[in-house]
Image (cartoon, rainbow, N blue to C red; front, side, top):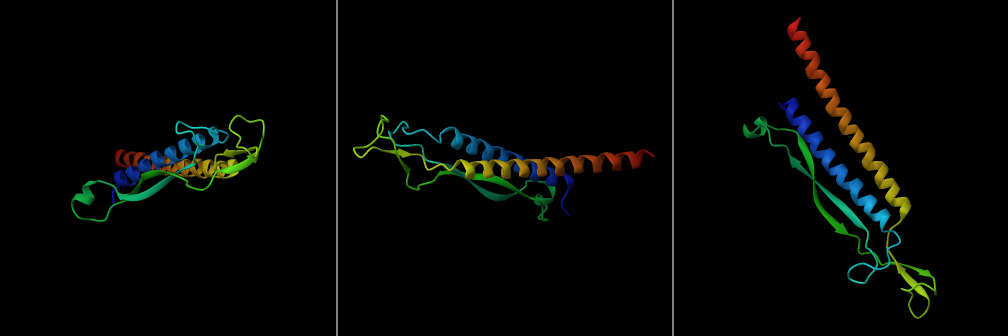
Length: 143
């Protein structure tokens, strides 16, 4: 039987993963107009790949099923082609007057940020509920 501690560990791993999702979405938004990176090409949108992982606990050491957490498996670049915008006066414009823009869609990034924020809040709530449950059990033991 999984312990409350392994449930907290699973939620804590999700907090770290959702924080990474938020950071990557913010980075994508910040670079939505970056037409030139260190390699001379437009910024490429990044995305977080999540993977499940077992939570290390006493139950798992005994071979019993435990809680499953989450971890960031990778942060990958979106290899979609850059958007082209007509701006003949821009320093990065090509001979036809088009500028290669990052493949970042601000609306998509806002949805990702909202999703990550809600998942973060849900895991915080789960941790608080477990803490309250333990506190009430201790109070019952005293009385």
